[in-house]
Image 1 (spheres, rainbow, N blue to C red):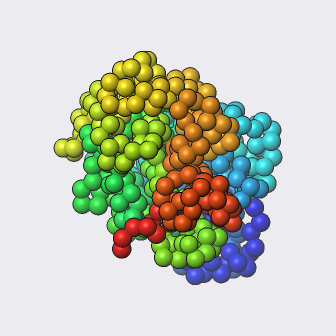
Image 2 (image 1 turned 135 degrees about the vertical axis):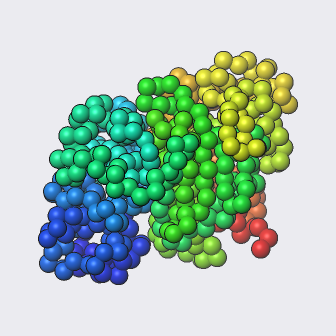
Image 3 (image 1 turned 90 degrees about the vertical axis):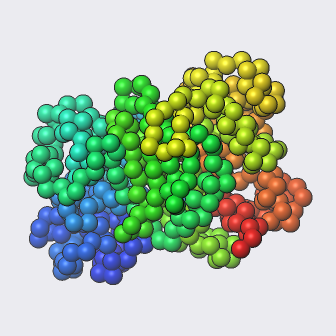
Length: 480
């Protein structure tokens, strides 16, 4: 990634939040690196060096600033085809996939060879994927030591280190600080019942409109909203392959742009996955300025509008199938019946959150007739079972940063899944910014068109942000 020093210096001097996470500043006089929005007194121009990633800064011998905390910087969304692969890989590494399956797992998810991935990654970030992954693990561990009461052993495992001894050695060598020393310096750690994290994003960020989107689709028993807080259950796969269930609560961050996530301590062994789910659901890696500039007049009314993702890609995909050609209210009723029949009861501190959504393994074992007995049409019941079996077997992965075209093709091949359903799933479960369900009734109405082909032609200038265009088209039809 090319970094123009004078532009970086101006952004750092102005503490311009648009550049937060887009580069990092190494201070040669202290050997510390910062975010460009750091509140410390700016260093002299000749003492600043600029890096495309935290890993590149650490590879050059700089340590993370304890004031601005580089591990809290927002990530980068996919902007153009030339950088898409590298940024998708970085996102997967940040989400913990490399810790679970190594670089090979990241390359397989993206549908490329590890050799090609290494080449494009080094061009974009200035370090190898392995070096980037090691920095990501260390920064996550630093965050857990600062923000939670997790024992050091659990921190090491949750951050992806197979050995506590290796974690201690790497942490001390890189940061010149023992993990226990950082734990002693942490202020006001969270309680043992849950862990609290602040996840940053870029301005503008329309939290309330995102919350309204989720509110219109709330699934009783699984999620609820109270006082601008989204509370729900979540089931994820842990590092050992077993499933972990717990609860999360999302609220607006009090002192920064973004969200505060409170995460059930039972989910601690899978924190990278849970944090990734929160990040994607609230579209925290978005670069709203780039989206607005590309969409032009369409985005002027609501520049902070984001693309709602999915906390659980399979859950969202099943609910999308259930919602084919029926009202949102009817779809919620049918989804609630599915949870009541096949979900798992869970204890939470929230009165309206009592169950987890049934996983792919559970629904894969069902006969379509069992699902149809809930009032879901036979065709949709068959589609749900087929999807569950494909996800359970691993032939379809419903998560961001996959081979999108291959995944959409796989969805289209399922019985009862047409173009609208495949694109709607891509919008949310894959969090694909260029998904476009051209046949959607709301899209057609907003564009004053009658046919999907006409809508698709009109949407061509909005590439690669057509999914954001869909959100603005839907929003333009709302009463204000």
